Length: 143
Ligand SMILES: N[C@@H](CCC(=O)N[C@@H](CS)C(=O)NCC(=O)O)C(=O)O
Image (cartoon, rainbow, N blue to C red; front, side, top):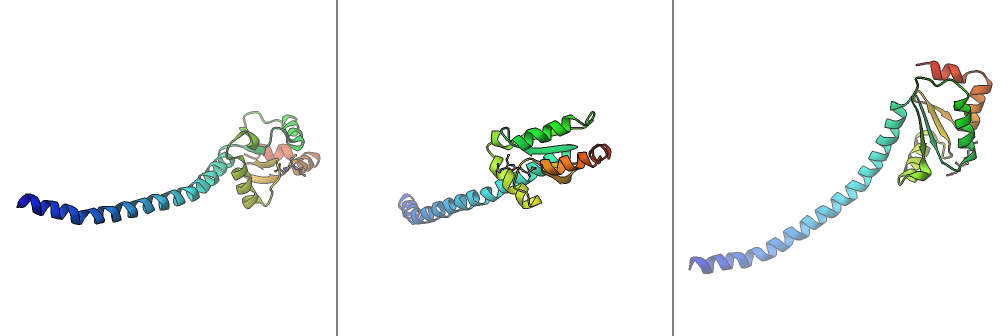
């Protein structure tokens, strides 16, 4: 008797279990949706970390002539004791996402995208202008 009651209860439980499974699979779907915006968050965190933790941060592409020129300008000034981070966006999976975030942050989509002590400098032409005006070394030495 006890056994048959248990079986009946089990039979009643089956649709409930199905419902819960469906609910939990939509919860999984929701979690996946949330994790895609978390990935945007982590791109933002990573880019901001690079800018915050380095005296000079350059978001570049390995084949880009303006990036090469910017590296040359930075090599021509004294960066001793400073952390210089060059991030080649074309060599990483999240490169396009970084570039998209940088565009949102600075209004500049092109590379190189240069920061000195967290201050947005701009591209190669802007860096070059700072050097020509004799301001670049002072900017780098500021901290
Ligand atoms: N005037 C800009 C020019 C930079 C530029 O045109 N960069 C190209 C690569 S050489 C670029 O970002 N193209 C778009 C892309 O690669 O997504 C500067 O001085 O930095």
